[in-house]
Length: 168
Image 1 (cartoon, rainbow, N blue to C red):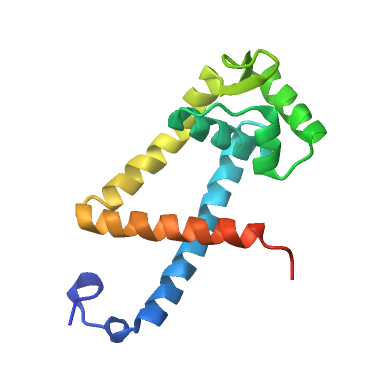
Image 2 (tube, rainbow, N blue to C red; image 1 turned 135 degrees about the vertical axis):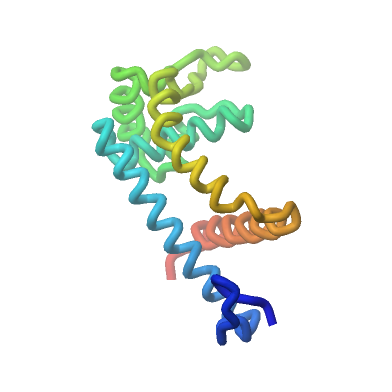
């Protein structure tokens, strides 16, 4: 039987797959809640509301994937109206956190980029968190990380599918 924390054998080691999936799902919800609190803390330190922080994360993630994101796609991702996102982008642009630039493929459109200042602030704040996560998971094997990656991708797909369903 596998050893639990500090090498102790626990009754938790006899969990069924169903119990383990439920417990991992609970941990994922706890992590999600904790990360929302981290985002609120970051936003509070820099006079941004949760939508501002989420917008910056969405634009930064798109940049990292090499995907252009414009205000209308941002509005859809945030579940906000075009007018609300325009106000959000105006606000973030006025303090240098976002930049609007002409779309290189379609001059009628605009693409959004995270400003250097926002990247610096985010790096300072979230860099410490990333270092802590890296340290906490240093002993995970490539196989372990592959399983975590598959689980998270499956969970993300399930959440996206759930959100596409009409309310019941």
